[in-house]
Length: 69
Image 1 (tube, rainbow, N blue to C red):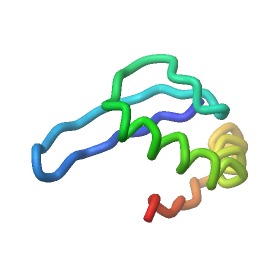
Image 2: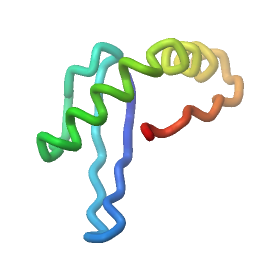
Image 3: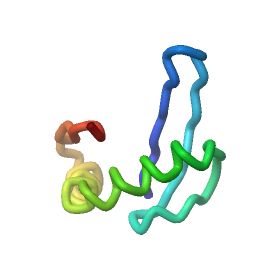
């Protein structure tokens, strides 16, 4: 599972999402445009997300994952 917190600075809106590694949304909502950005980010960083999952399960510190540019 991936937990993502997105913040829209101009509007100060905050969204909290719960997704699985394939990008399926378990809980939460996003505007369609933002959802497409999240899907793109997940596809670009799938390996790092899976690595962080394993690190979290074994109690190791997580690695930072670059934002979508």
